[in-house]
Amino acid sequence: RIKRDVEPIFNRLLMFWSTEEVPHEVLSSFRDRAAVSIWYTCAKECLQTEEAFTRLVAKSRCIGGQDRARRLSAAGTTVAQQELLQALGATDPGELSPAEVAERRDIMDAIEYDFGGCERHRKQRERLSTMFGWDKRREAVERE
Image (cartoon, rainbow, N blue to C red; front, side):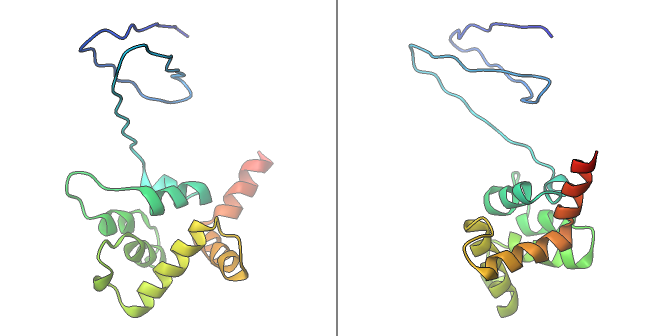
């Protein structure tokens, strides 16, 4: 590994991938500075774990005028996944049926409470885990 110290010089732009291969730290500064962080995510990869799914559904936004519902739906591998992701990604609940609105509300409530707090939230987690294979994938990783 190569270590580089980068001085905070006026008008300098530093860009890098923040991965395990590129460890980094930001040290104290005695002057004002600005930072912009942009996270690129792969929706298909995010469907593989509960934590990443939660971030994807609750916090992600699309750039470049892309339709969020369409982008999330495209990540699904089954019709059931695609329909669910379409409803979760909708920015206008008026586009959804009453059943889809209720399902979306139930899932978002469960996410807000980390799938805990009540039996309904835990059942929602079991359903999503079955649909996306979270527990099976975790067990496979733990066996390796």
